[in-house]
Image (cartoon, rainbow, N blue to C red):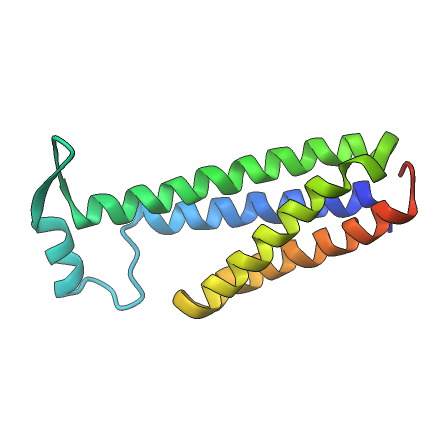
Length: 141
């Protein structure tokens, strides 16, 4: 397969991952449903660098931050696919960087989260690994 196509697939997978991640956070999703822990996270306020926050604020804020980075990853991978058409070898280091990040995300998700983000990160990593290999073989796509 051509690196440009593989990068486009990785971009679409990243976009779907971002959408799923964001929609999960919009409903204050918890695998156990409404729990005492979730209620406590939203009720305990403390000062953090001059502003009053709850643990739930931090939880949601970090989750939405991840969504932003997943969305930007999708955009950048789409742009790299365009560049791969004319000079795939030159963008290979960038593909490798995203590949390493996707592998790390899959490993962290395996250790700390659950299977859906593992599958999403792994699918992106597979596409990026194949694109990295293909970019080494082709000057253009």
